[in-house]
Image (spheres, rainbow, N blue to C red):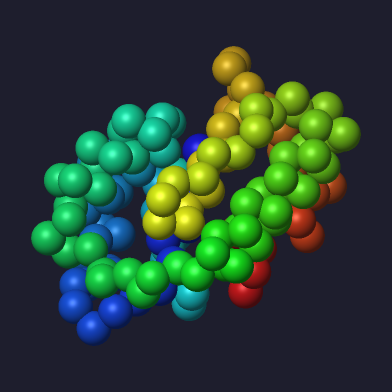
Length: 130
């Protein structure tokens, strides 16, 4: 599962938030435009975010256009992954604009077909916006 936390406000501490999320078992990559957050399930992600909310950066409101753009990007990525042999389920978007991607049951990022598909679809990856 992948989710991007977009925007940073004047309150909160992104570095502490990322560290706390990691302590909760999530994979977090800090980027110039926010955080890439990976979790095994939406439930695990939501529990970790709740446990770390005191450090959460105040997110800027995500516009409907940005939410649509994030979902469109995720849909294109999933379509590419499917063509490359990884039958991913449709992405899900949460109310704040984050998009969750999930690999099929039994596959991980270390599965050879997943690695090959990720390489083939790298330019379409939602986390590839630097």
